[in-house]
Length: 297
View 1 (spheres, rainbow, N blue to C red):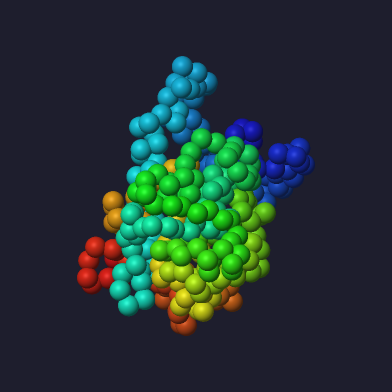
View 2: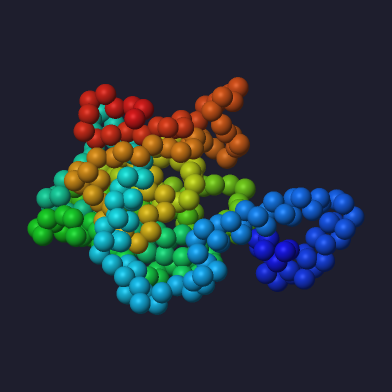
């Protein structure tokens, strides 16, 4: 029965089983605990019909990723977005679709792999066009007017920014894909010098920042002050159009923070009810575009 226990030690499972048997035989782990784990796993397998039909139906393979699936994924993306800042004195979003010229920048603007994160195609995910989908850049190009010029520079120079005469900029930054312990790091600043890029663009052009990550990242006060709007997109996966659905006002933002967004990693762990609870954005926070009493949604 031990073989039914979920063990994520693929390279040393023999040693694990040896130690587990020893702990059971010495009474350190009661047999009732083993039976409990096995019972719950077997129950799910029986209910799901795995024993009667151990293999998936290959005839359904062509259905995976069909139009209906992608529309549902797109809906999930726009409903999970959280609008954290919208304007300085007046609303910055929704963005104008008929702007003359806009700048799109950032490491995550045109990278499906980064949008998907870990556990996608590979264990830790990957970078680039790893699967079918629409990047944030492609979604922007699809959403704006045909007369709008979209200039894409992953890391634009000050010369490009200053000479571009852009109506506004969209900067997409975030983390590289990871899974499990490889995502651990002591500091949670925006990778690839993301804060520097944001500051460079926002100092010259009205700027919306889209953060692509599996967790909150540090947004320095001076960066937050400079930018005009901020959206947490989490890991939107393959359907970038779900992001532009909200950015350009076809749908309102409805998402709220499922965690407290800390000011710095020194505050971690941070939870509602802590004696010195002072997050950058509190648990449950989320703005909407189309109402006057913006605040907690």
